[in-house]
Image (cartoon, helix red, strand yellow):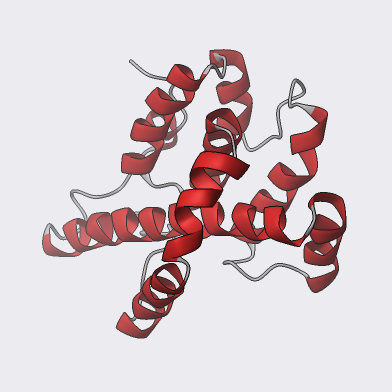
Length: 173
């Protein structure tokens, strides 16, 4: 019997979940400023979609695809993100942040210190921190959604909770 394995990243321990939750609580005063004043809706959705593509959360993907389209991001740009690429039409002032987001997500929220330093030098400490906050927020959503799917996978003996590539990479139906 050829059983498919659950390969998406999820919270594998309460400590990991509580650590991320604690970080968000410690940043709660900065969240409003970051989300309303420092990071535009389009930029935020691009960041969130890049991280979600890496982590593969179907719930976040579906929600943020719709939000991305509402914010003005084109279907063509979203298709590139869902293929794991930084879109060719990315605004030049956002490209480095999207590349950082992808690197950060691929390395389980552990960015190379030099890449982080480059982000800070390019955007300044406060905006780099705002970008990091957005990434942390979507990571929490991704890992939580994937945890739900992992539990579905386990209690259904592998019949539910997996996401096939075709479904994962489809644009809004």
